[in-house]
Image (cartoon, rainbow, N blue to C red; front, side, top):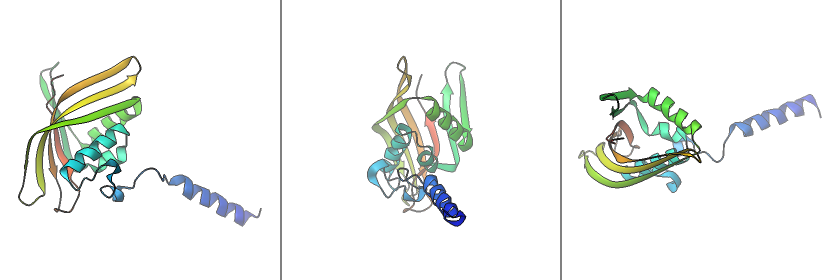
Length: 169
């Protein structure tokens, strides 16, 4: 095999190896029902569930606005805690890497309101979450969460500007 042929073979293998045909690109989000269509509010929650259950940080990251804020009440310390998108992505990536499985079930919509323009929506929703670290260590949580969703236009995908966990664990 000549050096030129070998170079092209190595280059072709590198290109093929860098592509993952099983992971959707960010531009495909919303175009397939497999993991939800975040152009709709319900589809947003389906995509969120997909991202958690398949531990997909690419999809998860696309569902959070650049100015995203996560907040919850730490009952052990008696304080409210919040962090931004970068901390949320790091925390979630660490979670995804350190667990065997995650099962997220969205329950009833407890409250919902949206803007007439179709670019702002606040949804309070019940959830049930099981996080399996190993066969002997499975954490379960039921609760509710308030998501403030926004999008630039009525045809863009929804992104969370804030997520307030109202669980009482």
